[in-house]
Length: 395
Ligand code: RFL
Image (cartoon, rainbow, N blue to C red; front, top):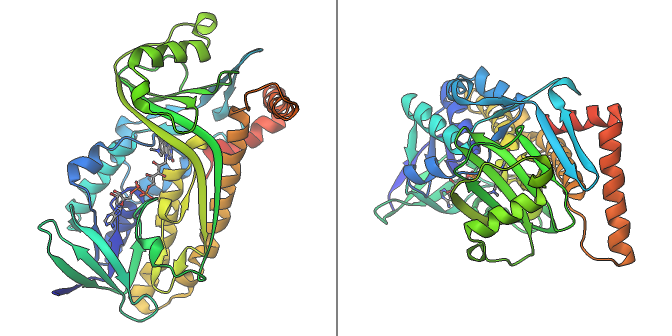
């Protein structure tokens, strides 16, 4: 099998892999990014949109924020609609006073790809990593299937597993070398993208006895909506008319004003689940983003964590590759995991804030009363609001 070399092989061209790749190139470290999908596919894959202030800071400091500073919208308010009324939190005036920049993930990916290529980077689309070996030795190897189907091997100093929730990098960590913590939150969302302008302040969370509904701004013409649905639901059972009827009902449009409706461009089921590996490194392999920890989208943290971990790893890899100083690399997991768990904790809290179990049994009513009390505390306690704001926008 033909062999090539690269200082760092990065598997995956999502936010994690592309930020890492750009930061390494900027520091003069050579790397190769492998992406199994086409360029068009990754540049059109709509997912996240809410970027935390720290994420924007990292991207700005490294010259990666031109697009989002020009095209992103700043959002500082979210609203909660419940059976007993609506309240807004202007989180830009709470906590640390930070705001979100709303910029679709596919636009960020497009910008990061363009910048990586402009910096002379080696980015191979339609090229999949199929095996990662030799991780405890000096020269790990990644076996690669190229776009033409041919196999070759890439030898390197370090491998960065940025290949997302279903990637192969984490499967290269042998059983016993890391612990995997998983939680299925038992809640599913029908995630929607509608060709319609936003209908209200950036974010609205509707807590409804028939299930949660959410509204999130994306671009002037596209809005993301979520509808809680039973586990195992088929998106095909949700034609546009049914979706809009249910959104109007749960968002209580009769009370708070109509929704701007439009064609539903995408509908997919997202099961709320968490999955954390500890440690997120093994030998010369380092996991970043969703590959390291999967987080439910309830608090919009996933892409933000990916960017922060990419920065932490770049800062650790550069001294290791320049002068052989591996101290920072040795503590990569220890540096990242506290932040991952903070984000997991807040996302878990958000899930419990937004979803109450259906039914009239004692336990269901008990949990719905806790949910009501939580919302009431958030509505009335300035200290709770500050804490919320700090965690909502922070990472
Ligand atoms: P990605 O973006 O999944 O990228 C991984 C890349 O690896 C490629 N790949 C491979 N390439 C080569 N060889 C292989 N063997 C490979 N296997 C996989 C894949 O094709 C892919 O291109 O992971 P990364 O970079 O870690 O980024 C994570 C984020 O994408 C994710 O956390 C967020 O999208 C989560 N998320 C949100 N995060 C936020 O911070 N704010 C939000 O508002 C937000 N909203 C969301 C979300 C996720 C959602 N879904 C779809 C789960 C909304 C939704 C609906």
